[in-house]
Image (cartoon, rainbow, N blue to C red; front, top):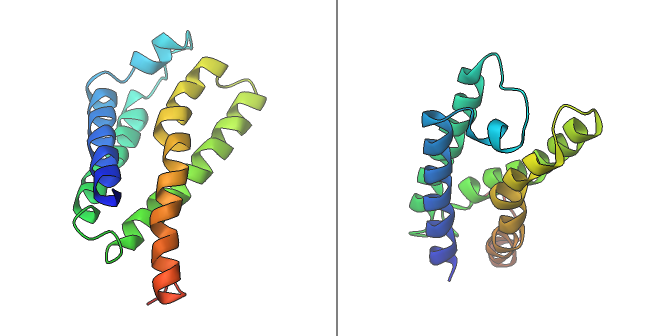
Length: 128
């Protein structure tokens, strides 16, 4: 099941990253937000997300061995929503932009947590 989850995360991240790179204004238009002056920064986010997708796909072959990829991704999936809430609070993002947070971050919290918990139970550390 862990391999399936990581492959699904990999495919999702690669597709989302590709969409953002090819159509950097898509989510801003969907959320009725002003388009950014520097779409290249948003495209860079798409590139990072897409690269993580490749990492998740590789980690699917042996999730315990490749746990650092999952751990770093999990941390990003926790910190991303914190940044979103701050931007929402300040009025820079609209609530509808949060669709990205649901699908990019929140739905992966529990599966990534369970994979990482298996590593912790096995070795009692993340630093070995």
